[in-house]
Length: 133
Length: 133
Length: 133
Image (tube, rainbow over the protein chains, first blue to last red):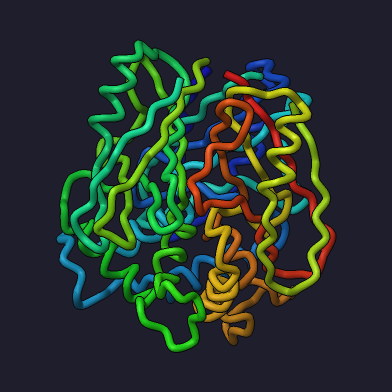
């Protein structure tokens, strides 16, 4: 089964916790065992699993990604000027696969599933699919 | 179902769009719904999903990866001298999972599936597998 | 089918080859065809597939990750002080998917599956799941 979530980002770089709505969808669909594929349909926004407790981790991560991949780069040729966002997307990944057990996502105590906006604010699409088994 | 694609790279660093041949294979196999796992069988070449339109994005990405992971590094101990290629492979990932719906890969307008050569030119192998469901 | 492996790391940064025990588990469970999802249940430890031969590759990779993501950073706000470990985890990924064929993991000659400790030593959990097909 498939579903598309709409995500409206409000900042240029932003990590949005989707864990609750993903678990809710799994429960609504009655899935008990399987895997969930969570996919960003964009090349300047990805998906990652990381810290769900201290919001400073997100702040630090987005700032460190900016340092690693500076927005302005004299040698970049891509006319849109957002090569840094493409780099970040391939670094965290456009998609993540999460195990489902007993009707919910298998995540560690501190893990959440994040949509990572790297060139916002924009209206984005996240496609999810369950393989049961 | 499984298949191995041969990829012959022509440059030291290169991103090769495999989207068309992956979609063709899915169609040939008659797959309608499921997921596709696309795996590089190498430790100095990976798989990523990124921009399929402006070729400058690939140029920029490969150059920025070179800046991040310089080929020469006085402290590297690996005798083959290609530690940078190993780093890039773990950064983009050796494998990606793509959703299949209505007989084709679910990708955003600007997304393509790329084989990423980081220590070419070489003859490479990409294994793909479908899980239907 | 699901299983949780316990991994006890002994160093601050460490890559531990899990390939043998993963193959053993697949064999014990009698799995012939499918995929294996290997997931770190932590936000400061990930999973990657990389070189299984020369141990210097691991040494180089961990050192280069330290250079890319220095432990101390004056602008980090996260009180635990381990933002670098969170960055590394999102860079390599918290989880990898491996194809299973003829009762074993499909890996290239030089590929191994690694648990990546980025803030050890600690006792860690790795959850694995098979989807047959």
